[in-house]
Image 1 (spheres, rainbow, N blue to C red):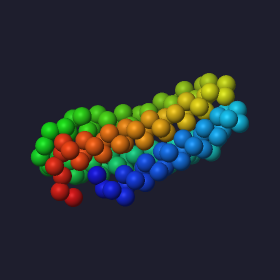
Image 2 (cartoon, one colour):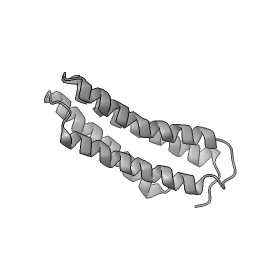
Image 3 (cartoon, rainbow, N blue to C red):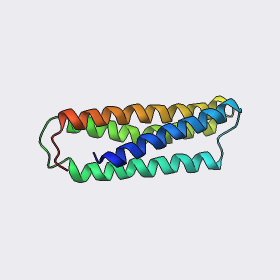
Image 4 (spheres, rainbow, N blue to C red):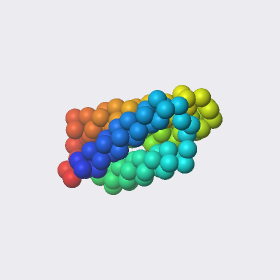
Length: 123
């Protein structure tokens, strides 16, 4: 993984989670600004996916399928949470989206571990 991209995704996911948890405490519903925030995170995750598609196939080592399954799951979590959060009009709708930021950060950490220890990529 490209280290600066990994760290950018981590920072964006954690910042998004913090922002959305504040919105949860204020009992706000999912709004257009929240959708834009999730969109920015998705763009970063797509950049990570494209980078991985370029770098991983030629590498030796096991764990490629596991790596890509985590990466695809990471792409789907914020979108699913945003959909769920926009349907739920209680204060916990935005809380669901906030939790997805923490989930993305945890999944990215695991993806980084797989990259470091199971896939031998020379970038």
